[in-house]
Amino acid sequence: MSSWELPEIDIPPEKAEEMIEKIARFIVNNGLGTPAIMALDMVKPMTPLGTQVGLLFGAAFFPLIPGNWGFNLMELFRDIENVEKLIQRVEALMKEEDEAKKLEKKKKAKEKPKGKRSLRNLFKLPF
Image (cartoon, rainbow, N blue to C red; front, side, top):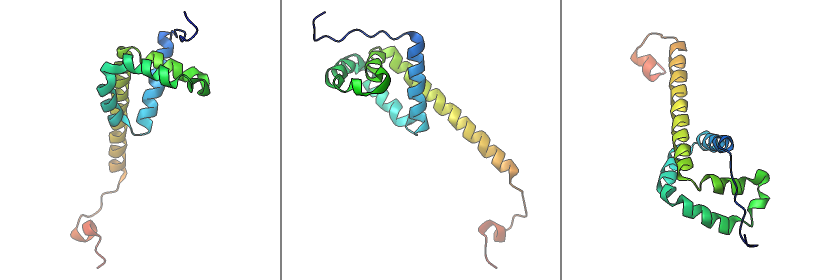
């Protein structure tokens, strides 16, 4: 190994799953599920090359990120399978969120008292 090469970073599978979960939750919690899935699908074939470029240009800034996240992210996304796992997890979280919203909507609909239905009540006319 020469002096300019970066050391290989091996991420244990448990750590990779934890990182994928954190990233997926961040994406979904901020309402970026659909754009993230589209972007990840587009760049998925180029991720091995992209991580190498990211290491080249980002290596100077990675030490500023706490917890060695920069190098770990580059190692995580070096494998296309991890990108696919992230896409699948984002889709699953989005589905869970939609189901939770539907259940909440049903609960609210059941709680509303049903009164007389007339044009006056429907349009809330003042007379």
